[in-house]
Length: 129
Image (cartoon, rainbow, N blue to C red):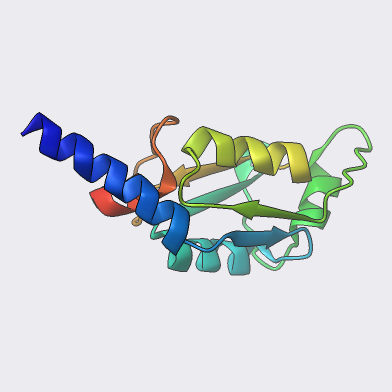
């Protein structure tokens, strides 16, 4: 049974590597569009924050969100980044912070429960948490 589970896990990782095209995030994307596309791609919810609160203005772009939330004037070079199903939750959350200066958290499909940091997006989608 353990061997079967391990084989399945390896198979899933390989499948995620090949079948999941990269999900591209651009600084010009609106919060609502990003959340919708993220859910379509990974079957998970993306919570985008403005400071310590959820960003409630969905029309705001990631770029303007950053300009309003950071204390200092941060000049991020990145206008795009790519996310894959093989990446862990914490890696993806850190990418948003490093590339765009914004805080995000990844939750289950119904946006009720935050995911563990060490699970991959692909595994989380399959678990139907």
